[in-house]
Every structure is written in structure tokens, then in C-alpha cells.
Image (cartoon, chains in turn green, blue):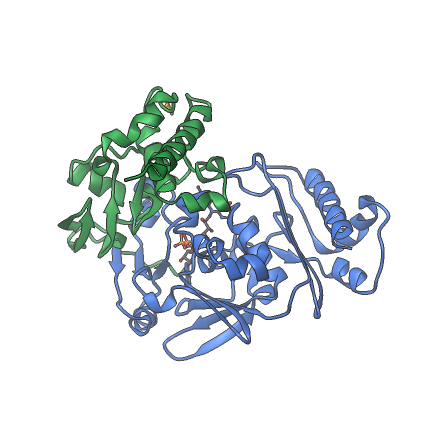
Length: 171
Length: 271
Ligand SMILES: Cc1cc2nc3c(=O)[nH]c(=O)nc-3n(C[C@H](O)[C@H](O)[C@H](O)COP(=O)(O)OP(=O)(O)OC[C@H]3O[C@@H](n4cnc5c(N)ncnc54)[C@H](O)[C@@H]3O)c2cc1C
Ligand code: FES
Ligand code: FES
């Protein structure tokens, strides 16, 4: 590739760096190899295996987590870039919020589900997004080989509807 | 693998002056298949992601400045951009999906230099200027002079792109069309950005040459007021401007025909 690439693979040198970030509300401090992705650190260093690896190339969204409130593919984030950021994973999700998704058939084999849920809940937390986007467009980065997507889209729409109903009820 | 983590732009430029490091922005190009990529593992990177001075989009009397870390999502959520530079938003919404849009940067798209890029054609149609900085100097290069060949650019190893600037031209026409295998998450088989301002027509095509290119023969004809009765009438001009090839995504013949048709319809709509 580009000739400007330097070589830093000296086995005698330790290139690990210490990083600190917020993970699901708690402070994490950990030494990482610069070659580790956020996905690797979550799954294999911190034991949070809810986040899945599908494609390792940003296509499937199974590895979706939030960084500073936005969905990202954790397979494309070098762990060192989590430094100082707020990371939220599927482990932080309140299971009660999953009901509309379960009831609409948004999950079958479940491989895509943690990622789907992270994007779906982000949409639910920001209903104003639907002024410019459809649920389908916002969910386009989460591939699912089972459901045919209708269940996912319906689940999100129903959950949005349910949120609106609760808001309308007098306190 | 080694990653430098400068806290300021000056520190980052000093790192690059000392060694030819690979700049790392949103990582959506660089990290694809990173775990199995031995070349990536031997790399020495400079992480730009913490450099807040490169973040954000600024609008002033001269135009629009996209900081080097401005993402697609930053543009999509900006109501002024939606109004004044709608093709930026149209293109941004077709780059991957939210997970890519939230991290992918305009500057990364420019430097990655893919002939199939979606950010580059719309920026080029709006006469974007690439602002480069090294420890010792700053220079500006028009985006249409930034590429020297397939995936090569005028950027020197000690330089960073610090911003992409768009002049304020009040573009009356702005159209972006991406033809891919499917609507979401596809790489362009043919891309077209069309704009018209006081500076004249801009016709920029993607995936039909070693770099994203301006179709200057077509631009000159449009500026001269030429009309085209059918898409086929554009072909002789386009053949002066583009050199499509057969590859895994499409064929040269398909690309040429589709570009002519898409362009013809875009011109017709703009008229
Ligand atoms: C699933 C998926 C879908 C995608 N879809 C599309 C698409 O539809 N259309 C499209 O155009 N692209 C697409 N991309 C490619 C990519 O998202 C874009 O090119 C993006 O803009 C790259 O920006 P980045 O910040 O992530 O770049 P990085 O990966 O961080 O860097 C890309 C290149 O630019 C260099 N670089 C970055 N910033 C600077 C700087 N400031 N100065 C100097 N050099 C710099 C890096 O060294 C590297 O060579 C897709 C990628 C994925 C994984
Ligand atoms: S594993 Fe990250 S997008 Fe597929
Ligand atoms: S439920 Fe099986 S991939 Fe989505």
C-alpha cells in the first residue's frame, strides 16, 4: 500500500497503552494493545460478550455499541480511540424495553439482535430522527438473515407508539 | 503496531514531521479486516480522533468549512447544510448507514482516494478546496487537482488535511445520483454529482475513471448552452472525460451507458 507506512512490529518492544473510558456508566482503566479493537476489548478483555462479531468490516452491525450517544460498529473502532469516551453496550439495556421487539418478531436466531437492539433503542431515544429519516433507513446498518426486517421495523414503530401513549397519559 | 496520541494539532504535525505515520480518523476505511491484516499490524499511526480543533462544521461569509474530523452525520444533522448544500446531505445519507456515518469523515473520504467515493464527487461539484498543513507550512489545493492517479494524491507524508472548504456560490442546481447494487450499504457502480453556480456547470463522475473526475467536455458544452436530445448524444463527450473499466462490480459498457442516462435525466430535471 502507501509507501509512507512505517514498520512497528518489533517483538521486543511493548506497545501497550493505558486508556480510561466510561463503560455502561462505570469508569474502566485498562492496558490495551493498539491493534485491539473496541470489540475485542469488550468481549475478550472485559467479558462483555453481548456485543457480537459478524463480518469484521462494518457491514453487518452485529457489533453496534454507542460511543458518546451514537451507534458505531465496534469492529471498526481502535480501542485506543475509546479513550475518554462514553461507551454503552447491550449489557446496559433494560430488558423491559425489549418487549415490543420480542412481540413483533424482531428476533429469530438472535445473532443480529444485540446490534439491532442498540440501533433500535437509539432511534427510540431520539424520535425526532423520524422527521428526516425512516426507521428502515436508520436500521440499514444492521443486517439480519432471518426476520426479513419487517418485524424489526414494526417493533421499533410499535415501541415509538407505546412511548407516545405513555407520554400522553396524565401523570 | 504503534499509535501516537497527540493532544493538539501542532503535536500531531510534529509527529508527522518526525516520521511518516498513517493518520487515523474515523477508521472506517483503515480498520476493515484489521485483525487479520499483517500490514496494518506493522503500522505506525497517529490518532487524530482526540483533536477537537479539527472537529465540526463552520459557516461564514466565505462559505462552509468542514473540519478534518467532521463526519457525515454532522452534515446530515445540520439544518443549514440541508438547505444550502443539500447534495452533501444526499451523499452522506448514502454512505454506509448510521454506524459508518457517525464515524466516517469527509476528509478521510478525500484522502482515501477511492474512485468510487461518494463524498468526493459532491465536494468536487461544489468546488471544494483541500486545506493541508505540515509543521512548516499550510497550503490549499483545489479538490479537482488533489488526485494524481489511482489512489494517489498530492498530499505529502508530513501533511494532514486539516479542513475541506466550500466557497459560497449559491449553487442553484445540486444533484447527486449513486447507482449501486442495492439502496443501502453499496459501493457505487456509477456516481454523479451535478451542480451549477455563477462559476458554471460542474459535472463530476465516480467509478468511471482511476479517480473521481470532472467531466470538463460536458461542462463546457453545458456552459455553451448545448442541448442534448437523448442520453446517447452525451456519449461522445463523456468518452473524452471518463475511462470506465470492467471490474467485479460492473462493466465498462454498463457504466458508460448508465452515466449518460443518469446525467441526461439530471440535466433535464435541472433545466
Ligand atoms: C460498511 C462500510 C460502508 C461504506 N460505505 C461507503 C460509501 O457508501 N461511500 C463511500 O464513499 N465510502 C464508504 N465507506 C468508506 C469510508 O466510510 C469513507 O471513505 C470514510 O469517509 C472514511 O473516513 P474515516 O474518517 O473513517 O477514514 P479513516 O479510515 O480513518 O482514514 C481513511 C484514509 O484517510 C487518511 N486520513 C484520514 N483523515 C486524514 C487527515 N485529516 N489527513 C490526512 N489523511 C487522513 C487515512 O490515513 C487513511 O488513508 C464505507 C466503509 C464501510 C466500512
Ligand atoms: S462485525 Fe462489526 S459490522 Fe459486522
Ligand atoms: S435474527 Fe437471525 S440474523 Fe437476525
